[in-house]
Length: 587
Image (tube, rainbow, N blue to C red):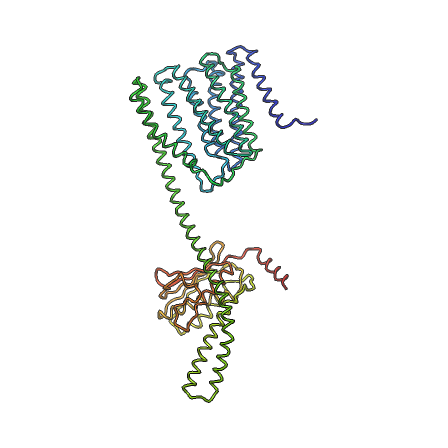
């Protein structure tokens, strides 16, 4: 036997429930305990069902948890109001008094619904969106509606009892509250698409049916034609069933927040503007009380309510502004950090472009200079062996000396231009660092230089070329040695350690520091005397670090001297097997 469609599984029991409920008034007379109990318990069961479904949706869907949490709160307050009806009409078997304290609960249950849709669950929120701001907005909204109820309805309900005025004011304010919710839902139907539009349309239809029915039901109460279990409750049950069905279908519709290309600035400012309107409207309503409310007792109560509301709203506004200021400071700090990172990346790109352009230029220049330079050296050697005067021979020697110096420079340019990614493997960077320091320490034996080395014993391996890494360490150590020689001696400290996923090596000296730290990696920049350096060593080191996926920075220390910091990414766990497989394939 085939199962009925899923939609029929819901429609058939719902229709049966409504038909059964509609038939009860014809069987039982007004005021019958069976009719009253059936009406109250059925309605309470539907409200509890809606609360349970909303709670399950909040537990399952993290992206819309706040929305479903507010929905569950509204349904639970609804259920509390209905449980008060059950207690009075079923357990105590009394008629609902007028005024009834449950009316306040019923009035407040719409506020969480308004707060829920105001969260815009259809829009994806960034990680920086704070839920406490939305929570504050909800509490301010709750306080505002409580103030309206206390200002408009409560004085004629409990201070100076006037049932006619109280009933009309309550009905109008409750209808206004419902129309606000319908307005927001209608706006979202217009703004959304797909499953979210279907979801909002169902909510709108259910709440519109409930609102219209509530208006006619209130008119029936005034005309004394309403009683629990009457036909007026049938459309209320239908509206509740439609809301429950919408809640149950939401997980099947896969309602997930969608990214918004251009978030509405006006909507983001709406809570603040509503809070401003609330703060401004409260004293205006207080002025109306002073000049147009003729009853002193009701007048004094409304003034007290206005004063307390202003104090509470002022506190929440101050708290909200404090949170916004803290968020603004955090965003400013984050923006500053991002700007610094952007400048750092920009400098790296500029440096890389410099090296690439210089490499092409150096390759061409070296090629063009090599041939005439070889001729100059050859003729200079011939003149040296020829029978010439001593003064001429000295001049020829100087020509040969400068030509050889030019040849060395051209050779450095060629090496710099022909840098290519070397064969890399997993290397022990600690061993390479010790080897480079030992080589440079031998050159420092005759100088007043002390070398201090501190290295973590369990440095992880990195992926790189051992010869190029040793070249980097020697170049930086050699520069530090030259700086300490100029200062008449000092200390070179080397510190190697692991920092999360990086191996960090720091070279610091106690020399005079650098005059222009931002330019030390520029090609041909040097502060050494003529003939002692071409300014290409640190540029080549920078290129090697980039090729290894690392970073190199330098700056002057506050206590004097300079510090170079090299950062290498730690090799991944499965990299050794990948390298061995690649080497096997290449060979």
